[in-house]
Image (cartoon, rainbow, N blue to C red; front, side, top):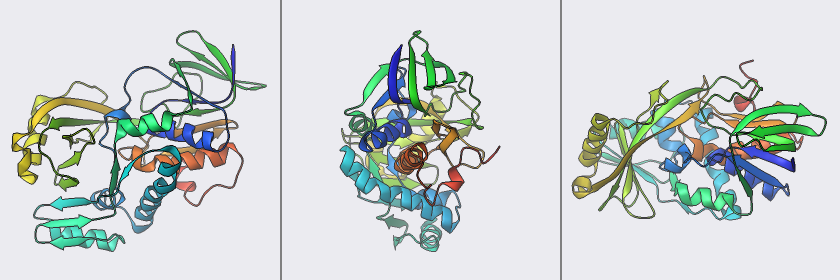
Length: 329
């Protein structure tokens, strides 16, 4: 049996961000996660409060919460070594005037030029590089949690390799999949997203259009995405979807005509009934960082801060209530 101060279960964006925030707060952290690639590693890495708010029809207070989540990344990235690309994002297409108006109504800066709208308020990061940076200095144990139970010292965890550990506190950041560990979780449903990675000429900043986005990657090429398929958790890419995404992307970005497909893939994220994540205490000593829908990277620093405050018994932040794990109880 091993002992730990805090165990974070899960190594996606929100799990590793929470582990990094705990480490920065002086806590001794162990991350428990299987070896498989997380959906966060496959993501495009957009920190996009402006276009996400406009496309989802959000209210001004909800848009302000996403902007705050993005702003938290400035200090958090500096503290953890994550590189931010603050090069903005562009909308291309016939809805440019309506999009510019929607962005401005939500309080975002938007510059329209004919059929394009540019906002400097949407940023990005390299997902795999960010995961590596957030992992630095944190102990990692390979395994899948199968049993979690309260004990006088805190929580006892048993993984699928039959390793038992006791932690004073635990954070569940396990993604979309149902967790049969003996502790009921708030409602989460899967959303599948299919994307395409290409190499070759691509835009030097994010380009969005109806039904598609193109995000340049640090190693060259771009990620083209992505579908939002509610209730699906299968991972086999659909060739027809790949063809449609490529067609939409090449229409928006003609330079992609000569880009070569590197891979088509699908990932699955969890979502709550209202689309906001769960961040805080589920039980004493048991935190959750779950269900970010498609904005896991954008919300990661905000969620991590809320979880750390909750575990340490500090006053919740101003954005805690909409992310309370018990709001559907």
